[in-house]
Image (cartoon, rainbow, N blue to C red):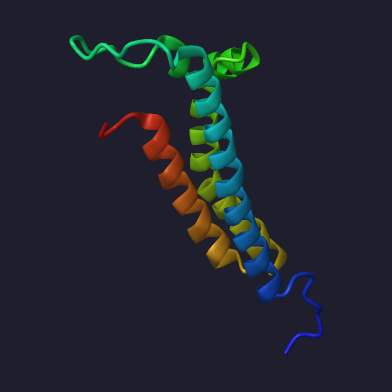
Length: 130
């Protein structure tokens, strides 16, 4: 047994991770809901046309365009921001795990968790498979 005192107990880390996941979902859901309200307010009266398929606009395909259009108050950009927050929530959870393992000086789990983070980021940013 080492005489070192743990900064965080395992239960504390579990509570932080649980809170992070809970609040990440609540915040992202709220942002999507607000974006939906804005979109319906501005476009709810328009008649939908399903004869031709129109993909997502260019401004929704990158983070810079999304944030610029959020500032302009566009509903679809606000919805897309909520979706990005939802995607960022488990990534933040993995990062929190890395820091908790670092504080515990459990370097094997730091490496494993960083590998998991690398796989997640590679699969998201590479465009391979979809």
